[in-house]
Image (cartoon, rainbow, N blue to C red):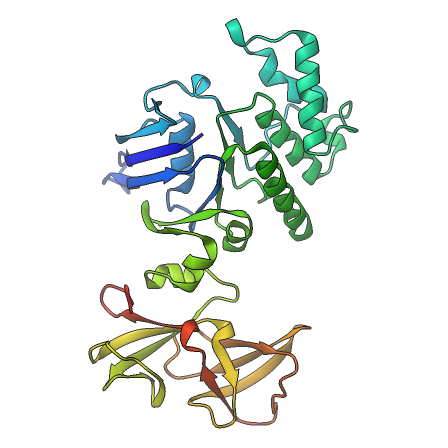
Amino acid sequence: MKVVLQDLTKIFPGRGRKSKGDVIAVSDFSFEIPDGKLIGLLGPSGCGKSTTLNLLCGLEQPTKGKIFFGEDDVTDLPAENRGVGMVFQNYALYPHLTVKQNILFPLENLKGDAKLSKEEMLAKAQEVAKLVQIDELMERRPAELSGGQQQRVAIARALVKMPRILLMDEPLSNLDARLRLQTREEIRRIQRETQITTIFVTHDQEEAMSISDLIVVMKEGVVQQIGKPQEVYDNPVNLFVAKFLGTPPINVFDGKVQGGRLWIGEDDVLAADGIPDQEVYVAIRPEGFVLNEQGAFSCELKRVEVMGRDISVVSVNKASENEVIRSIIAAENKVNTGAAKVRFDLKPNKVFAFDRRTEKRLL
């Protein structure tokens, strides 16, 4: 099911003495979500991603704009008539019902022509339980399940009525790190098998990048960039996107372009052909450093952290906006830990320059 958002805006009125002004939670959001794709809505807390999800499922009404499922305008359609499956952060399972009863619940509430026989409901419940690999847990109650199993029950309950679209609001936040990795792989597998258009909300950029066909990066209700995860990572349109994507985070420096060269502090680090002379922000991905005793960029060495296949060189530089600079290099490199300085060459495709005033990327 294709989903189209046209100039979608949601404004909440100010409340009380401390917040008199209106709050623009989502501002002029226009986007066409292709049929059968998994889209990651990504951004910090308060950026408007969960509000967008609530607008899609009908829990909130837009201040202006339109929402289309396929060719159908669902902007004013009640939530129960939109055919949406919703998976929440806290699972929202009925504790007194078994897994089977939790999955059956949406089917038991179908009315009219959509109403199913008991045998049809049981067959659908068994089919979707097998899809999410909980078919052997059907007689257990939620309290007898692990966090990952409970999340699978919530996904099965959302899928059992074969929704037109599936909405997931930070569904992995309550799981530990290893279980999050396993469950996100399961979500991706289930989405590919069912081919249901899915919108996945998260503040975890690694999570969004690993399973999404497209990501939408938001800030304060405004869409910053839309694209394939790797393309957005490799070509951020502004400093916010560059900072938000990447672990460890990108290293940011005060720099300048002078005479067609890019400078960080006193170091002439790269060619900057075509960019007029100006003060800039320079951002370098952690993997953008190449250890070289004669390298163009000099930093004060603090320590070296061994991470198995990689080494993290921790250093400082007067021009850096980060407290420390993290440079990720291959483990076979030998770093002289007794040296006061460490020098690098920089990979041009991992270095970005941004306008000091607008913070937009300079190409």
